Image 1 (tube, rainbow, N blue to C red):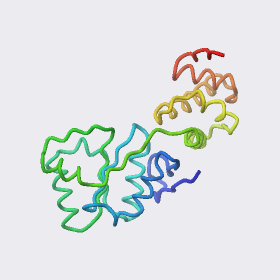
Image 2 (cartoon, rainbow, N blue to C red):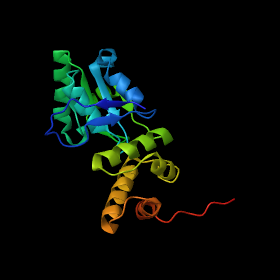
Image 3 (cartoon, rainbow, N blue to C red):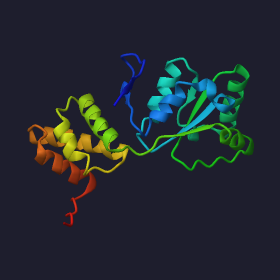
Image 4 (cartoon, one colour):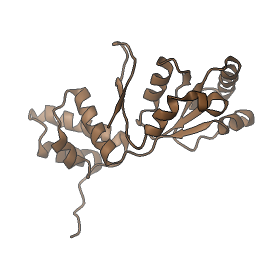
Length: 202
């Protein structure tokens, strides 16, 4: 499993790396080669907390082009203006649209973004879920190893947001109980985030 280290300053908020897996590696590859994009424009979508903003920061700060994060909240006329300006300047433009579907009212903008390269981050598979759990724990200084990940991954929801909440719950429970994050903490965190585990049929 590989990672992208973001070229960010020490004062930059948030994670400083992107964990890559089957769900997002095609996005990283496409962002590394913007000269191949139709109309020099790509639209990135994906689930909450899947790293869309991190990709946008990496793309912009690596000098490959401009990025508009959370474009849904931007006025459509302003977004259309930004698209036109990128075309005039011949500069690649990455537009982060959030989760699909994205309803666009302005016909000209809708047609232009529809013709752009469509990139989507998928749900994390087991391998990516494990690496995300370990990376999120490391960011918190939380001592979780592969044994913990091996227990948590088969039981955790395949959601970036839920994985983040799970590691946060493990950290919180460990601090509250003043004990290391062992099996009892992992179980309690899973129940706190996802509810009681249903018994499996033999």
